[in-house]
Length: 210
Image (tube, rainbow, N blue to C red; front, side, top):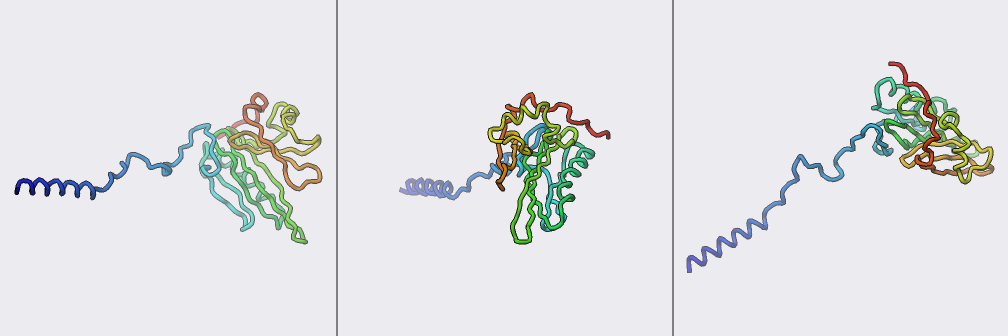
């Protein structure tokens, strides 16, 4: 009888020990999901929320981005000068916000939204795109981005003849935008990088001398 009681007591003790055991902690060498910092490789397309930049401002209403890391100090300086230009050229009383749409070793692209408030309180918004070649820090526009701009415009389904077309870049391709005559809102159309293959100007600029 005593032997049976001892066996039951031992079994109960083992059960209680198992129920009270804490789950094993994750190894410090195993990153927890959602906590590992993204690593940017050369040429990798970087979403806006991962771009390495800080917010700069001339006033509470005028903001622009400044990269904190890039491919060398000289290129970094040239890129940041170009990214500051829309803010420094802004007319008095206007406000400026921005979205970094692409930031990697190949391209830096920022879309600014300028807002001008009229005397009657009406706001007029306009977009300013700054696209920079990552290898040379050269600003890229419709004038120098493509070997055949007419062929690029032919890819657009909605751009009316004579419309002033601009573009910015994101991870999907080039986003072209323009104002249709008599309309306040922009019309946008994304053309994939694959569809633009062979149309890019390969001699946009030269790398700044060190």
